[in-house]
Length: 372
Image 1 (cartoon, helix red, strand yellow):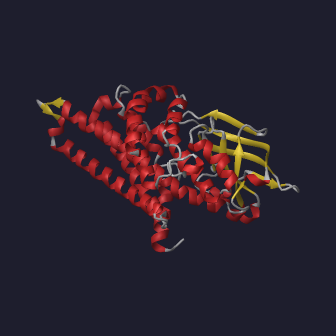
Image 2 (cartoon, helix red, strand yellow):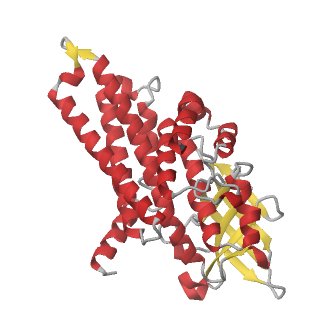
């Protein structure tokens, strides 16, 4: 049922507007609110906190449909579901869940996740954003975060800052931030290659005050929280990659049946057929690996390795499939009159954010060998 709802919204509302949003870079607020009204902004969030109360497999199926309609919409959906709500549900207090999760799950507000900094991407422990504890238990935050998805429009943010630099990873703490408070500032919206309707910016804190009850989890647990959240987030990005790949594949299959050369459809040529076969194999393998990771998560089992395998496989498959789609479409694939050039641009980010392909290979190899 959730897949059917997602497919209907994607086909009727999102896909028809995707090209326009990609061109303008405008944030698709009304479409995002529609997703929230239909339970897609808090799929795994229990109903008592405004969510749909479903499982990780449902999340994957819905994400694939939305991403096939437009990757930018699925990016916003993924951040709200995986990075924002998931961490608070796992580590937050009852009051924090009611305050922060409900508004996001119902689609009334937008959430964001602030880990990356200008000088620290994959090396998250080298962050410089500092939160200093005061005598009354509050914290004063100063520093910058970069590449914050939904940063220009987010009401609430899960922020990671160092509270004890000497402790490295163990000196990082997670906080819940209200962007309407004094001391929070947004930078310019980044002009990106793809997922252009998903607004991204740098954010800065200047003597921003965090109350004691706005610490997420315990002081010093922030890095562990972030890594756990990213494990779940990688299932979301794998799902997004599958959706992009499916859209590129379906567009290509339709095109090779219609486009003729040398008196026959180009889909009849063996070189084209070989590409179609390889595209299909990579697409199905990516979907099944993503569903495996989601199922393990839903069973309460460890899924770190499987999430990295799914994310790595699906993201690289999406890039390869989109590349082949452009090639098969020829000159039309290079034109903005066809959506495959957008799929190509959108696919690239799935190999970069929430852990680059290089980081996924490190995670997988270390899990397999036990060596670090």
